[in-house]
View: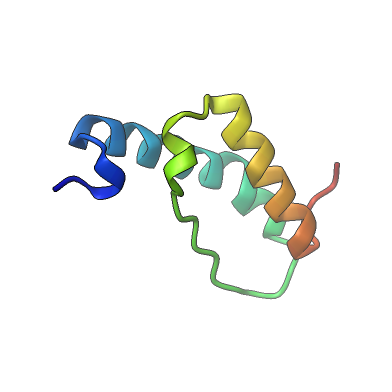
Length: 70
């Protein structure tokens, strides 16, 4: 059975979106902090979210980690 009852196409779409947000948004913002590991997990709600909603979630994570500049 697919994870979160989603197809491979849907899982890969969410994975690509999160990877891009991590690369373009999260990593540069956290570069000034001491080294740390960050894991982005896709909750079932991520499959219904558009790119802007996922970006807002990443911004909230950055704020909690102290790397958010917003």
